[in-house]
Image (cartoon, rainbow, N blue to C red; front, side, top):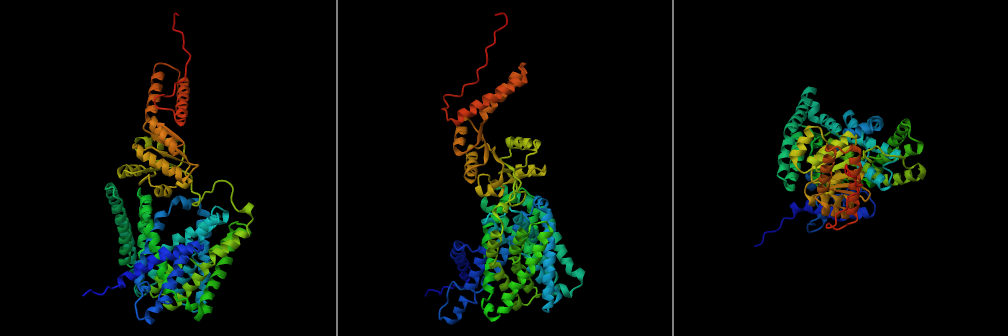
Length: 591
């Protein structure tokens, strides 16, 4: 007799994969933000809509799982998001945008959070609940606002820069807010203040201390194994282990992952880790929003329209005028200030994270939180409409700032050096002498570690991987220099870089003349054969040593190099090498 198949363990994976593979692409085609797509899909397939059919039909529908089936796994979506935020935080970004980040961003959170706190207190909420609610609702939606601005090509405008700076400060604030929620929990309130903070502080200190001692040596060991699978497993281990350690210390799992990201951000493995966890971050974060959507009952809008719609209206009406006033205070023109207020006025995705944590800590009641989150979702759906209205009000001639854009949206332009052996190190040294900003990539973890110990900006990773090069700033690079010894690796880097950017200056190291010709065909701007350079340097040394004036030697070397390069580009055959320049034959003494 065949045992009856139990579909229950497979419901959650089938549910999520169906949403990710079918529903979200459909929302993308309709130009709806993926975040809203996950939320709406979660509502539809959750227990409050289609899930109710389970109780009414005589058979079990395999794709209609309840929200509890995905909630445990979905929590790791936020963990990976916070880990990635810690990994991406850069002192350079903060210094570059410090006026808007720590000025406009800090004032926005303080004033909007304070105003929303007063509204919550006016409705009778306890002080701790009102503080958490005000702080959570003061945050805006990075996941929707940044893609909307990028699609309309307004990220490099003055208002776009201000909006991004505020969102960056809000990202910095999420970890402290999660810590605050942990401190407001029932167990924290019942204990002595020192006893409440002590486990948390000890937990943070332990994660930081152990992380500094263990993380870099562990990744050096794993990188030396040269296995993509092992490196990915190590990344997942670090994220999950630090999250669990933080939870064990009484903190949120997301806070532990954030600390781990900060620790790894200053290592040579930062770029490779970003690449390894990106698919997991996206999928699990999508699963988190599906679980949030499944927990929301859209019928609450029908049953309590005043509460749900009122949250969206009050939230937008409180934040938008304050944001406009603050933007004007920071010398933004009226129309750009209005754009800042309209796009940052609605709620954001971190409200779901913070308020869900507050419910678990018994700070906020679940029913009230559900109504508030529906209101936040309604406000988020208005962001694309607000962006359209704001863009139409700005004249085209005022839309973009002239000149280079010193922001994360247009990062400082660097020269990327792929390969940091003996050749790459000399290239880097010359870049440093001429004060050219550069970034190096090498696939040998020992070389990357030694360079890092000397303060060199070297990252470990696969330079032939286009995604990895993009994480290193290929889209904004001034030039790329490929110095690897293996010709096949140089070919791959040149091919990938040229496919990504047709205007990029690419200088490549070639084995010989034939390899240089091949590199020119692949799109290299300049290819430098080792044999040619060695012969030119030998000639230069010999001529100078026998007394030929240095100026004449340098001029002739440059002339010969130019002739050789033009011949290679013209694809002359190897059997007919370029002819050297013709010097005047001088008469010998006595003739």
